[in-house]
Length: 348
DNA sequence: AGAATTTGACCCAG
DNA sequence: CTGGGTCAAATTCT
Image (cartoon, rainbow, N blue to C red; front, side, top):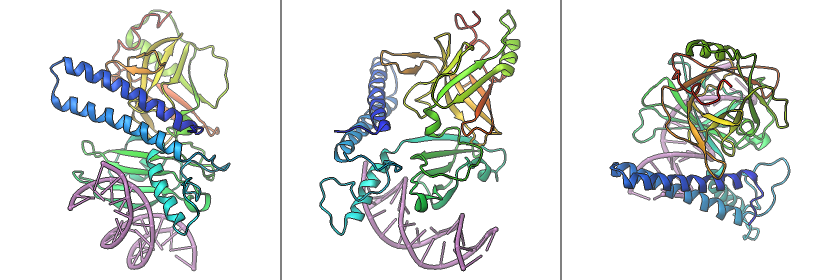
């Protein structure tokens, strides 16, 4: 078996860890008076996790050939079926295997809130060029789901796709599910998609600049942080960190509600960021929920008791850099004033 | 005219 | 068998 593809290995580990965590949750549920529905849901998620892990293992075992340079694991390739001698139906067979593999492509979802009913185009403009290839009415859903693929699919063999669906509860929110990362070279759109997997793998830091460490009221502190908190997203390497803040990926890449970013202060875990509503447009406000979390023996972070009231609003600022800077601010209205600022050592 | 979207048909996993 | 995802011909847009 060859798990040379890094994301596969990480996805596998991630699925297994998630399975363990869900099993622990189920154990707690079994000893409490929780509903059978929630137990069943947990059981389903556990089975799904191990199912995915098995699929990854199976797939990794059957596709052992290294991918040619410049191609992405997920591109149809006549050599996909290792045990098949060349035949006329190879192409078709390749696609069948790819459809299996496409399921294993890294996926991540983000929710985008739009200001107006007709704001879909702007909301889904994530800096990449997409071609719509289908729309489907989904059972039980009020709104249809739209399917998009990269415009450069044919010319550059870029197999990134996305699905866009309007939220049932709040029609101003669109759930965008991305699958596969872009391998194309698009004409620079100046704005890199903030939640792209490439970016998720980058090192993330928070600079806390010129922070006044004297005692202040909660609101003052929040207002001060609003002005001074800054998240700098950089590509690899180390930068000098005069700041006590750091923001790190909890897991292998995609920032999801189950895979948050942690917020550290002098090495102490204060909380985690997970996307609530993330706008792809650099000029728009993004919303991240903040919840306390802890690190387990695997080095994975886990949310403890997420609270909806704990919201950080973050403004992303477009820069000339393809990576871009994220300027975080904290909204004192939405944020629980006691979190995370009441954490021990926060103002040390 | 070429690019993009729409939409019914088809495929296939569950 | 059903529903989600994709294809591709028809249609619309630029």
